[in-house]
Image (cartoon, rainbow, N blue to C red; front, side):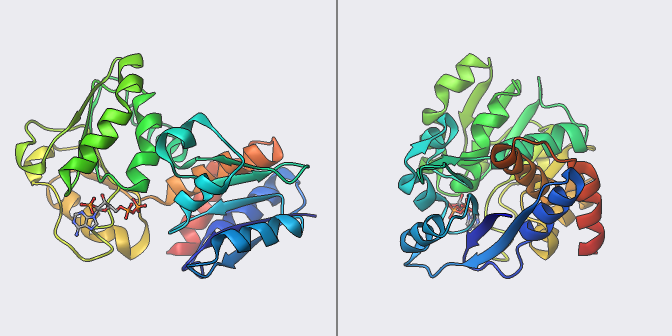
Length: 276
Ligand code: ATR
């Protein structure tokens, strides 16, 4: 069977092996998918060893997504733009191609699984790190009316907006970087791509950005997503955690590796049930 893995640190709690084995079962594909705990200073040597030993593809998670993008031999346009890769495809000649399916997974979960259209909507993206960067282009491709990037360190939000200005123009979206103190009006969709919940920090935006029914999305799942989603519920918004994004980014990776689209919704239901 072909071998795949997820590389990260920490990695023990990754749901990716479970998700990919369910995909394999449901599509009748034969593959092995394992966790690889990678020492913080050894991503490159570890990656070369995996390629040497015949691994056909890797998912890459915190904190190695930038390294994965840099070390690959070729990059998708998305990776060239955001500088982060979550999926590596090893070609038959051993060359590594880098892609990023995180943003596609986010958009698929919002539009298909949650049934919320982004087209013509006001969208607020919180954060300007790797997670936010990976999501920005796929979000813009949905042609929201406006996309506001808001980050604790404002200059990083500005940089991200500048790098994506041409995509915003192409999809007729107004793309702005705003400080949380200058946000006005309500948003239809708010996406938390900061690490703030993980650190037990305060909610990084004031509640006046919410209306009843705003979709408040946290890219995290489990306890890490709870503070933000509780805040949303307290203000009448609809919360959604990032488990669907995780399953959908995995489905996109599976497609890149195997050329087969796995059924993501039953797998999301299964993984959700196992998490509870
Ligand atoms: P990731 O790859 O998960 O995006 P990252 O690149 O380290 O990780 O980015 C972390 C994001 O969370 C950044 O947007 C960061 O804000 P800064 O750019 O100002 O550092 C944000 N973040 C982390 N801790 C935060 C906190 N306590 N409050 C608000 N934002 C926070």
